Structures are given as C-alpha cells and as structure tokens.
Amino acid sequence: MNVLFLGAAGFIGKNLAIEFAENKKNYVTLVDKELHYFDDVDFESYPNIRIITSKLDVDTRFDELVSNQQIVFHLISTTVPTTSNQHISLELTSNISLTTNLLDSCVRCNVHKVVFLSSGGTVYGKESSCPLQEDMPTNPINAYGVQKLTIEKLLYLYYYLHGLDYRIVRLANPYGPYQRPNGLLGAVTTFTYRALRNEKIEVYGDGAVIRDFIYIKDAVKGIMKIVDGDSQFKIFNLGSGHGKSIRQVLETIEEVLDIPLDVMYTPTRKVDVPINFLDISRFEKEHGRLETIGLKKGIIETVSFMKEKYNLNFFDRV
Image 1: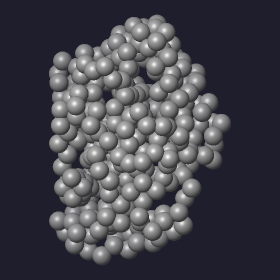
Image 2: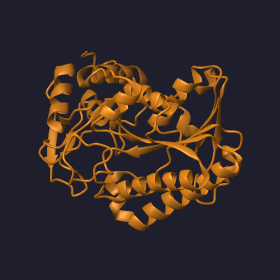
Image 3: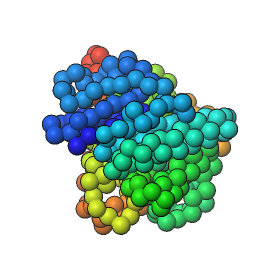
C-alpha cells in the first residue's frame, strides 16, 4: 500500500510512519518543510520510507505528491490552539485554501482515502457537556478549532460531490515519544521534560482544567483501526475516554519521579475550555475496545524515552 503523510514531521506523523513502515508491504512517503525536522528518528533504517521536502502551502503542486498514493494523511496545520486567535484570517486562509487544493488533487489522482487529524480538544467548544460525543454541537472558541471543523465539512463535501472517501479522527491530547518537549503543545510531555531538568513548570489557571490524555502508541493503535475499518461512520473521537485535571497530571509526575515540582500558576487564558474529555463509545462499538495504558504508565514510558533521547540519565529517579 502506498501511504502519504503531509505534515509528517510532527510527533503524530512520525509515530504513524514508523507503524506503517513496520509492514514491509507499505511504501511510505513523508512530506514536510525541512529535512532536518526528521533528524530525531532513524528513518534511514526503513527502506520503504522516503522523505520529500515541500513548503506545504497554497502554491504546493499537490498532484505531484498525491499521484499513485492510496491513502493520504492530512496532518498539516499552520498554528496551534493557543495562538490561533491572534491570526484568525491567516489561520483560515492558509489551512482551508490549502486543503481545498489538496482535495482537488486527490480527486484528480484517484486517491482512495484521505485521513484527517482533527481536534477533539477544540472543535466542540465549551457549551456541550462531557463526555463529548461526535454528534454534539460544535462551537469552537478558537480559530484553530474553526479551521479543523471547516476542513471536516470540506471532506464531506468532496465525498458528496466526487466520492472521495475519508476518515476524521477527533483526537484528544496525545503525549509521548517524539513530541517536542519545549513546544506549545503537550502538557504531559512538556511538564515531564521540565521536571526532569529541574525547571519551573508554568500552569495557566489553578490546575483545575480537565483534559483527555492518551499515550501516543495507544493513539496510533486507534488511528490504524479507524483507517483500516469498514464503518458507516466517517468521524471518530479518539482518546482515553476519561478526564484528568492538570493538577492530577502534576501529581502523577511527582509520584513517578519522586520529587517535588516547581510549579508557577498564572492567569487563565480565554482559549482554554474548562473541561474536555471524549466519549469513545462509537469507536469501541465499531472497532473493539481500546486498551490504553493509563496516565501513570504513560508518564513512566515517556520518562524512559526522554532519558535516552535527551541524555537525561543523570536524573536517575525512575
């Protein structure tokens, strides 16, 4: 099977690429803006992976990328939720116009299926009660969620007009190996990394915000089932199925590392929904039970990866 990942250098793309490449019958193409974005993974050890650089903007010649591809993963996003409201026009123009051009190319080149990583954390907004189901109202409070939701609608439109098959994964908050430990996304990964380095941890609000956290290997396992599955549904929530507060995350990191954390609480941000966790019953009804390892075990695995990857072994606490 020929599989294309657009925006492949993010940690979701890297983990998915590794999973697909383990099957030698798959031919995997990874596309992102810079070659060095892939330096932290030994992709050279996979003969069935090739890497292409592209600006991935509205001027990209997507026909050249999607030609002869059976499955296309759309992992491209130009911003993150916390900053998207600062550049709403750019957020919508760059992401939605790009996606329209991509889908046009997928139709022309007879792509079998497009898989879009949407956002279970932002598309629902703050008005619906948790756990959040796929058919609940969607009223995002940031432009990131608006563009994700708009792309979901575009996928339905191209399916209706052209028969282009698709799957939408409304993913919760994944964490773990290959996530940037000093980025703007990933509370579990960022907090764990800073704790290992004895650095101050900045928390917005009082730590009461509740999120749905899922270890990346569990997320990949779920995404693979959604991609391979034959279901009447096109949209699936994917998460742990329950919520943990930021304060609980910090307490679990303290427990795993057996050290006190240096935490600084700052004012709450308007872009943060107070509580968000997903109902995954549709996924489990269609694809079977999703066995997840739990937050504590996931943090232990993340610590083990960080110690080896970032040379943090001198903090031998676990």
